[in-house]
Each structure stands twice: as C-alpha cells, then as structure tokens.
Image (tube, rainbow, N blue to C red; front, side, top):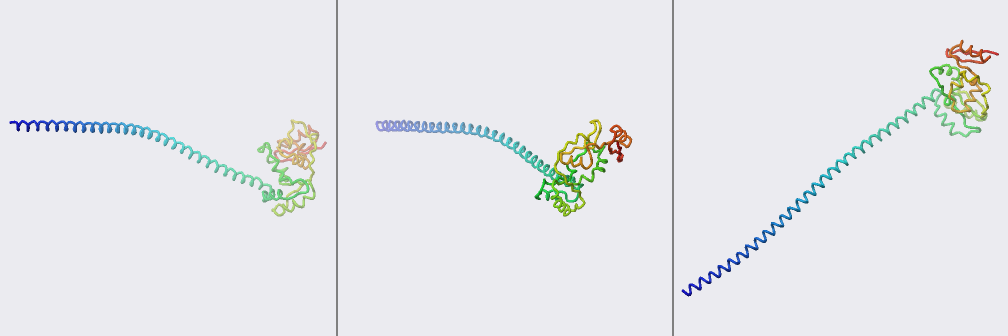
Length: 263
C-alpha cells in the first residue's frame, strides 16, 4: 500500500510537473503566435500603407505623364508651326527674289547682274543711278499707266552718272550684259527748285501723278521731260481746254495724244 501510494504520489507529481511544463510551453507558443500575428498585422498595415502610397504616386505619375504628353503635343505643334513659318518665309523670300528679278527684267537684260557690277565698281563721281524706273511709281496705274509708259518708257531703263568720266565704265558694263542700247544720262546732283514752273495745284501734272522716291531722279525727269509742268488729261479736248486756261503748255492724254499750245 505504502509503495503504491508513493508510486501514485510520484506519478501525480510527475503529471503536475508535466502539466505545468505543458502549460508553460503552450503559453510560450501562444505568445509566439500572438507576436507573429501582431508582426503580421503590422506588416499588413505597412503593406496597405505602402500600397496606398504607391497608388497615390501612380496617380501623380499618371497626371504628370498626361501633362508631359500634352506639353509634348504642344511642343510638337509649336515645332511644326515654326517649321511651317520657316518654309513660308523661305518661299516668300524666293518669291520676293523672283519678283525682284521679274521687276528688273522689264528694264533690260541681266539687270540684277548689272546692279551687282555697279556696286563692286569704283566710280569717279557718285555711283550710277538706275534703272530710273525702279524709283518711279504711278499713283493710279489703271488710269495713267499706259500713257505714262508710252511717254516716259524710254527713260525708265536709263542710268545716270554724275561724272562724265564714269560713262565709259558704265557703258562697258551695259555692253557686257547685253544692254548696249541703254541710255546713259550725265547730270550733276543739282537739287534746284522747279516749283515756279508748276501750274496751279488743281491741275494734274505728270509729276503729281507719279511717286518718285529719289530727288535726283525726279530732277532728271524734270530736265528731260518737264514733268513738273506737263499736264495729264482724259482726251484731246480736255487737254486743249486746260492748256487754254494756262495760256500755253503740253498735255498728254489718256487716248494717247500729245497736245501742245503755244503762247
């Protein structure tokens, strides 16, 4: 009995010890599981926060990408606009050069080359001026262009020099470029007053029908054609009537007549 009781006590103690060990081991496991669970929950919260940050950054990057795409489209459009503007400017320049060449062509052969040679040459007097027509414009070409072309056309392709020693040099340039028949005027720069020869302001004269940009050319035409006193009229009858009121003079008419009345 005593032996059995001791055995029972021994087993009871061992059971209690094992139970206590088991409880301690279970609590440690629980604590470890709780710790791991808390760690996992913290990692989940961190991951969720990181995911939220990534989503926010993604939205920001997407917005920035859209802005950059819009800026890129604007830049591309600006580049295309600039390219088109350059092409338009180049075309306008080429067109202007062609128009310039065409405008000079009416005054003779290779006029652009003539002007370039004139610029490169040393002159005794002032550089030659011409063609004179490049300095002359008709204010109302539809009305007076034809008659003025008939009367003044011969001098529109002419050149002028201020020193007689320059005439042979200019003549040689004109001959070399196929303009042997071009008129060369020799006249010093004399800005004389021609107003005393003009009729009343209500009378249309050749000078008043023209826009002459160079005062030297203006006076050349005054000397050569008396444009300050030559009258413009619709027809012979009107020209004759105007000249009667002026007592004398010359009139050029739109129907291509030249009317002259002597005092």
